[in-house]
Amino acid sequence: MATLSPARIAAADVLSNVRRRDARARDLLRTSAPVARLTPADRALATRLALGSVRTSGTVDALLDAHLRRGHLEPRVRDALRISAFELLWLATPAPVAISQGVELVRRVSPHGAGLANAVLHRVAEEDLPALVHARERVESRNCTASDIALVAALPQWLADELVVSLGTEGACRMALSALDAPGAYVAGNACMHNDAEVDRLLSAAGLIPRATCLPGCLSLSSAAGLSASGLVDAVDVVPADMAAQVVAWLASPTPGTRMLEVGQGRGTKSLLLESYALRRGGLAHIAAVESEAFKVTVSRARMERAGLGKAVTCTALDGRRLGEKDLLPELSGSFDSAFVDAPCSGTGTMRRHPEIAWALQEPAVRPTGQSLPTLQLELLRAVSTRVGAGGTLAYATCSELREEDEGVVAAFLAGPEGAPFSLVNPRSTAAFVALPPQAKRLVTAMVGPDGMVRTSRVDAPELPLDGHFLALLVREA
Image (cartoon, rainbow, N blue to C red; front, side, top):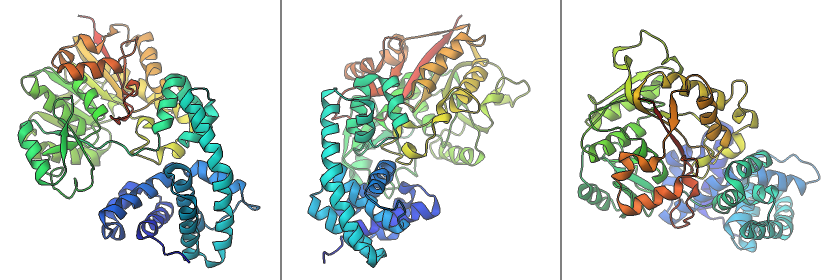
């Protein structure tokens, strides 16, 4: 009988709590006492196993069920089998190790289920693993179907189909091949409090090994482990944000001294980035930010105060669709020099970071009908556009890879009466782009499509793991 590794036990307990409490795996990993007691290596493995098992759950469940005479498994047994199947299929753990550990994980929660676990996991290794290897080879050669992409990336078939339509075969294949990789670890230095050298010293003192990137103020970390415990995030010395999100914020950043309307502020991350980048270009802007969820407004307001931006950024609880109304608060009155819409979206560009998305997202949510995300996004864009002054810029951003939420929403907006005074502007013609160093300009240029819209996943650089973000810049006629 093999000895169970502590990392696998911790991962199984996290999966059980995800299921029972309907919680997010990352949140539970962050607060789990058993995970905290693990060695750094075991903690990293437990994190990889828990997040990967959640991310691949739909695909793995279908494979497991195909090997059962009856489709029902005790939930805790399924949790254990998900972990071992993920290891076999996507982590390349040697089959004897993954199967042995999987059997013991099942024995731990259901002694009579060990024999079943052994049989099922052997079939996964003998039948499903070769099928996945062949599918991956077809995806690598770009001679594949959307079904191959769905299997390799562990996605519902409908979502794989949508990604092929949205990104093209090349883009969808690149996404599939990196879909189960760990996300990049990036932070932005808070330029409102520190210069770059000070940020580097703070991170180095915390043992986080920062490395400069081509984007001003953006640092990559060898690992995000220890970032939260360092206190640097709570003190707003640094801002955790994927490099792709930082690129979008840089390109949309306000001109120093101007007035910007920010919609979809969330917990204030983009506000901090926008002001940091404005300051790097000469001085702070005046940002009036709105967010529909009141508790997030409370969080963002406190962050702005800690960052020394309490006067530069106002935070208001308001549904952005109301911005076309009259008699709003004084800070929201009049026209703005620019507006930034960080739209609620499917999050399909951040599935490596948020593994629940792949199997929680439902197809009707991304169709431009009814109470869907594209409907909400278009309503927001139309309302916000009424507040942009003559010659002003309107930035529309998502972290979605789906055309229906991105180019489709922009096209629908421009085709309507609210969009008539606006036209697309290529980010490469903006002052924000001009202010970038040469290497960052080359990176952004690779992200800009023929239509002038930004899709960060266009960058083909495995050494630079990026989330998938979208940005369209529009300008109102003078």
